[in-house]
Amino acid sequence: MALAGVDAVATLEFDLAAQRLKVTHTGEAERITEKLRPLNLGATLVETAQATPTNRNATRFSIPKMDCAAEENLIRMALANLPGVGALSFDLSKRELLVIHSGPSEAVLEKLALLNLGVQLIESVRQDNEALAELDADGDASEARTLRLLLAINGAMFVLEMLVGWVAQSTGLIADSLDMFADAAVYGLALYAVGRGANLKIRAAHIAGWLQLALALGALVEVARRAAFGSEPQSSLMMGMGLVALVANVTCLVLIARKRDRGAHMTASYIFSANDVIANLGVIAAGVLVAWTASPYPDLIIGTIIGLVVLSGARRILMLK
Image (cartoon, rainbow, N blue to C red):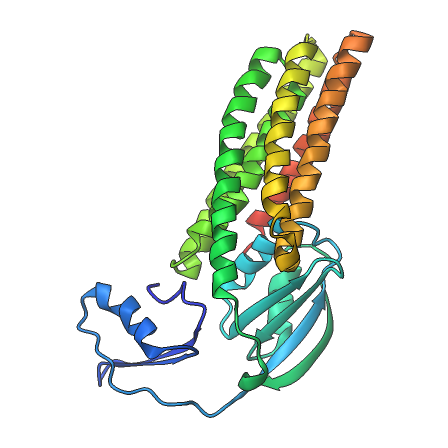
């Protein structure tokens, strides 16, 4: 677990009898030693040598349903505990994923298929280590800072929008707050995963998935209850809170837009936030229709749509193994 968050580490070989550990990695060996010292196991560097280049696979997958940062983080979690997986390169515009790995491509395909994103294997070619691209450490750190801001914004808006939704009797606002929670959960899991073991990360994902599932089902039950027994959504609160949520998601959009030219990952995050803006506009439109028609049905319809989207996201998280 101490070395799980070090991207440069490829393999670990333990020799318990000799009390030695062999680490195959890129970069400086001292970086590995610094991670081991806090364990207070007396770790010292014995030797380091240049390894003979070994062949690995570069496998490209088509993933038609990968259209936002949520899917990207789910894919990262799905492959986190698969031995031999190295770098992942996402191309959102082409809906493709390049995986650098050892072992059979079918094992990677099997893990990805569990997410039900329509994955297909395009090609798999052999490459040596010298041809593999280095991960951008500075870019990862910058991305993490942006993710923390997104987590804070979405977490705060989840609480606020949920409270106002209950007061306004608006299933649209309640469901949209759950969309905020779904975003915060995905970003939070991505940050929580740093430096932790794969099993712990998957367990945390499942906890978030079950919570998200329960909330989504609760929102849909509330839609059904209000459809059966009637409700009086307050259009002014719906539109006002919808505007606040819109400002929050536009802020997220601006934060990501500053880095959208870094690569596919931040482009994915940009599109993810753009989709949230569309959901906010849907809530505002429902508020306008409620005021215009004096009917609760526009609110119930938008609440149902967003609730189903959140439910689908929970299902994908729970499919992770």
